[in-house]
Each structure stands twice: as C-alpha cells, then as structure tokens.
Length: 294
Image 1: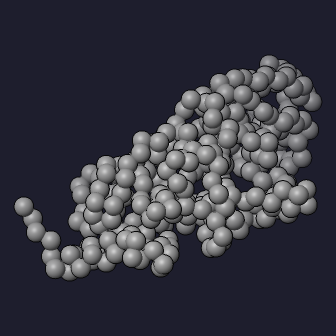
Image 2: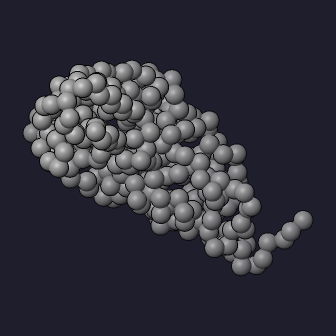
C-alpha cells in the first residue's frame, strides 16, 4: 500500500475543510474547484456556459424579456442545484452572476455536497453519485428541446477526452484516464455542425439539383429558432448569391431543391451557411459545406 506524503495529507485536509459545514460561511467558488480540476476548469472558462450571463446574445434577450415583464435568468446564472431537482429548471442565484453556469450550479447541492456521475467518494471531499449526470435529462431543465429526443446530450456535447478529471499538482496521475469535455461544443463549433448535415449538388445542363440532409437523430437542424441556416448559390467570382433558401430540418430528414443556372456552361458555388446569432450579427456565418459546380 502506497502511503501519502505529509504534504499531500495537509493538502487533502485543506480541501476537505472547504466542504465541511464549519466552512459553510465561506462560500465555495470556482477557484476552489480549479485547485484539483485544472483541465476541466480551463475547458469551462472557454465555454458558452461560462459566458452565459455576459454574452451579447443573452444581454439582448434579457432586455427583451424585461421589456415584456419576464425577468427570470435562472438558466444563465443557476443557483446550486438540489439533487431532487436534477433535470428541472434551476433557481436563479443572487451573486456572482457573471460566472454564468459555473461548477457549483451543476455539481454542488445546497448542503455543500458534491455530485457527479462517478463512483461515490469520501476524499478529498464527499462526492455522491447519480447516473443522471450521464443522461440527457440532466440537461433538459434548461435545454428543453432534448426532452423528447431519447438521446443523451453528453455523447456529442461532452466528448470523452484524454486525461483524468482530477489533475491538481498533488494528485497522482493515472495512466489512460479520461474525462468528459466541459467546453460543450455545439453551435459555435463549425467542425461539429458540419458533421450533422450532408450537402449534395448534381448538375444536369442548366438544372442544378440540391439536397441537404440532417443526419443527427437527436434533434432538428438548426436546433432552435434563434439559429438560422441557408443554402446559397453564387456565380463564379461573385459574393452575391443569385439563389438562396432557408433550411430547417427535423431530425433524420432531407430537403431537396432545383435551381436553374443562367446557362449550361456557367460555373457556380453552392454553400450551406449557418448563422449562430443572426439577431446580433446578421452577416456572420459559418460555411459548413461548399460545392464547386463546373
């Protein structure tokens, strides 16, 4: 049996103290979590969850809700989640709103007990296990479009990465350990978006047959109405489309279109564009797929 060093023992005692009732008056913060979970904290800081309360998109939406008499921002700055409410709409916290959806919102209950999908542990702090953390219904309190899908959001939006979920300076490294990404790739990751749709373009003289297929079985493309997608056809060496069509596909479906080209020898470019925040930046888009038509 390998014994802990004196330094590691003091380190563990310090972390354990943070989570005891005696320390309840000193509120736990993200920096406390980052002591042992450095990689996951870095991933979170780069995520939309970390920016949930300060992003221009949310601030505009918040202003619109306030004007209409609705002011709840619970999903953008949630309070510690009580276990009996996992998967439900959380309560809005009263402070540190700028941290958005932080570590405590998903992993710490109001009794200062940590929760995860891993095995129950007692050191360096008490952590209880709930399988819901690996299930899509954990996310649906705020991401309601996943309620009827029957799929686990985590499979795509929390991919498994190399490295342990605990990687503090005093934690022994475990060979082959993995963790689930806490950067939550989605509507701001074009590489991921492009994998969910297939664009085909077939020319027959002046006729151009187009089709776009949503190969994602879990949800629509785009997922929510605040996102937009379209197919455009541009003449060669031009930035101005002469044909465009908005796209909204239910899961596992295909839309087909026919476009008449200007002449049988005309060259053209077909693009599938995705607009992540058209309400704020209407001219900002990702090109998910493009096809040259010779």
